[in-house]
Length: 98
Image (cartoon, rainbow, N blue to C red; front, side, top):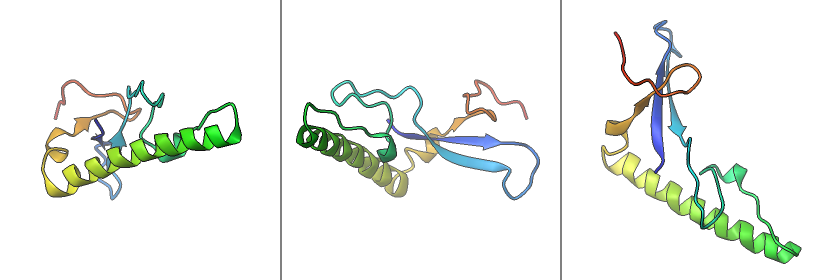
């Protein structure tokens, strides 16, 4: 599932807090894709037409996932209630020390 990550550099400046889409560790075996980023999609095939169809199928899947994420983000608290805290490298922080 797509989720959000939060990073706080603790400098209390105008860009000290960052919210990004967290997608690490994602893999969909049916479509053979590792990211929900539509710009990461590659279509494969023996012919150009097969590669185009493969790309279209993967793109439709990613767009359905992004639409579901949009609905959960804008219409519920499910996403914002489950934000993962990360360090400056995007690695999840197991416990936050204030």
